[in-house]
Length: 134
Image (cartoon, rainbow, N blue to C red; front, side, top):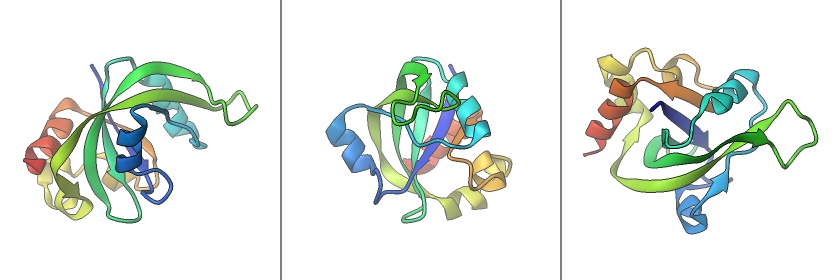
């Protein structure tokens, strides 16, 4: 199983709205590295949901429920989506400041490539963020 982090601006698509919907396709990715990350996602992979711009917190866990397919919001075949479903709301959101202060997370893409919207996490990084939310 692989682990991922996706970012969404809460005013565009919040964790709360995601939970109401129960499932969504992850669209709007227009960066080739993020697109390649979507293509690497496998059904059952776990995904941290991060509120960007406002809040700047990891707020929940989702899972990949359908692997990549053509983004239905564009005719451009360069872009793909995956389907995600919410799994669990974190007891305590984990802020970007907390993540930056944790030495074991110094190399994650959230810090190194702040504009990347879909990024891989190592299992120990995923687990550390969950531990920080307890």
